[in-house]
Structure formats: C-alpha cells, structure tokens
Length: 434
Ligand SMILES: Cc1ncc(COP(=O)(O)O)c(C=O)c1O
Image 1 (cartoon, rainbow, N blue to C red):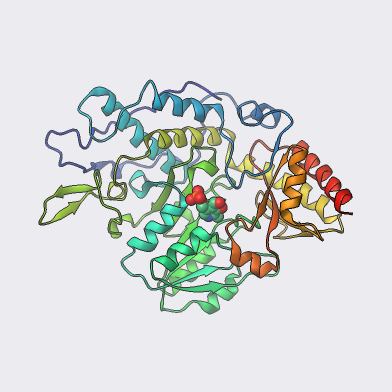
Image 2: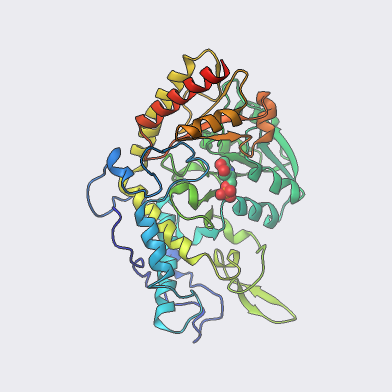
C-alpha cells in the first residue's frame, strides 16, 4: 500500500501561466465537461486489508503506544509520507508558472490531485478549491459571501464554525441539541425564517461524534431560501461522503484529519463561481492594471499565492490510501470500536458518557471528581493518548455543564487493544482518585 511515490498522472491540461497565448492566472475551464472521477473507485493494487496489517503502514504508531486522538489529527501512512517526500525532492517545482518541463509536470500533478480529491467526494474538479483547512474554508465563505445576513449554527459547533461568522459580521442564531447530543433539526425547522441566508452545521461533531442528517438540514435551509454549509472535518475520514447527493451548498474539510498532510484542505461548492475572491495576490487574477483587476475563474480565484503543492499531492495520496480500504469498511470498523468502548464505559459508575449511541468514531466522557486533564495525564503514563479539554467547542461545554471532557477518537488503524488499554488505564485513574 505504501507504493511508489510518483507524481500523479497528468491531467492533459497545460500550464495556465506558462506564457504563450493564455492570460496569466487563468485555468482552462473546458475540463468542466469531463465526467468527475467515479466516487470511491476501487484503487489498483492488492485487495483491502484491515487490522494489524494496516498499522504497519503508519510509522507514527510506535509499538506500545495507543493513539486515540485521531479526531485531532490522523497519523500518516507511509504512502502519504513517500508522496510528500517525492514532491518536495525529486519532483519539486512550482505550479502554474514555469515554462520548463518540471514545472509543467508539477502543474499537471497538482491539478490531477484536485481531480482525484474531487472524485473522492463525488465532485467535479472545478468545484474544489484548495485552502489551508476547514478553518480557512469556512472563513472564505463567511467573508466572501455577497449576502452577509443571518446564519443558523448549532450548540455543538467547533469554534472554526462559529468565530468566522461573528468576525465577518453575520448575525448568529443557535440551534439547540437533542437530549442525546444531536443537532435538533425539529428545532431548526421552527427557528429558520426567510431572513436566514445561511445554515452552517457540522456533519459529525468533533466532541460527541453525532452524525447529522444533511439531506434534511439542506431541505430545511432551502425551504426558507438559505444555503447550507457543512463542516465535514470529522465526517470525511469516517463516512462515505458524496457531495452531489447530500444537497448542501458548501462542504469544508481538512486534509490532516483524512490521513493527509497539514496545511491543505478543501472547500467544495457547486456555486463557487458566485463567490467573489476574498484574498488577492498572484495566481488568482486574470489581468492586473492599476485601474482595474479582473480575476481568474473559480477555483483558481480562491488560491491566491503559491499554493500548498506538496500538501495537495500528499492529500491525493491519502485519498488513494483511504479509498483502497473503503470508507464503508472504515466506518463499520470505527462503529464497532465505539460500541465496545461505550459499553465498557457505561458499566463504570464514575463515568458520564456524552453523545448518541451511534456516534461516529468519537467518544467523549467525564469521570466524577477527576478533571479530564488528570485523566489524560494518567493515561499517557500507560501509553494511551487521548484528548482532554474543551475541544474548541466552549459553547458545547457550557451546554453540557462541564469545563472539559475526555475524548477518545478512532481511526482506520485503531484496534481492540487500544480500547482495552484505555479501559485498563481508566481503572488506574479510579484507583488513584478512588
Ligand atoms: C468539526 C471540526 N471543524 C473544524 C475543525 C478545524 O479544522 P482545522 O483546524 O484543520 O482547520 C476541526 C478540527 O478539530 C473540527 O473537528
């Protein structure tokens, strides 16, 4: 699976800023007529593997260490490391500018990465803008949107899906949660009015693991004439996501949670063309004069400056890796681990469990009389790495009535031993604080 770290095959598209007749900074849009890469196409190579076998692909998973913080950031498979090393070494050059072959090849590889990642989420390449991560994607929409009005968020949102709207001057309304920690769409239906122009919700909560019924949220938003932005940070690594079927208007995610590098993420929209640029600089322009500047079509117009070339190629390698295992298999694997952990935690009198039974890959809990930071520190002594804190979701902490939670989150490489080590570690916490 680690494979050869080669530049991805070319797109057949030329370098857009390589001089000649093409206006500087423009991308050919004729590829929009191409069908998207099929969703979750079976990757070439050996049949899907699972369990212990997969852990060997992750050099960060050192023996005896139980990594249960994949919701914060995922460990990287060797295939991703190899792809980034090749992109930074043997194959390195800039994109969209060079007249020499290496740069033309790199441009083809960068655009092939875009196409590969677009196909992974059921999108077309011109609908996918590379950004630094979900945070930047949401900021982009919040700032660039021509109608900054009223946005409906929910109590469980990550700060990345709260603060950008506040900073950009939107009026924020808040949808409550159900008792088991899901976004209450019945309440959203009652709250939404024709004054709302945006609804922005997490597909999967980074604290509670609660999955959202995106189709229903889209229907509710559209009924009042609002658009729906989905923060897909925690969903894309855990559930098969097909943006063409979800019904949302914008979908944002970060590469590093999808087993790819940091510094790259995606904003998907089938209406990117309707958004004006929000950051100016090289690459995003059509023609610059001091009197008037015109802009490149989407998505290039949202990629001001030299892009995260290495990271984009690394993310495409991560998508190949994840696809070869299959998100259905990853989801089933993580659900089984969540079920086992929730069952074990439910048996402990000292533990308060948060989130719904069907939480996706993420389990948050608190222990009576023990601060989550102490839980995390004691577990670390036994080689168990969990997250403890407010998880960038302070309004949710307030709603739950706790300053922080302990959170275990799974990835495709997590296994039963990780769960056992966590449960044994918690027994030690109970002994120390008992
Ligand atoms: C649900 C959710 N949204 C947004 C973010 C922000 O992602 P990033 O910091 O990669 O931009 C995170 C990261 O933890 C998250 O879990």
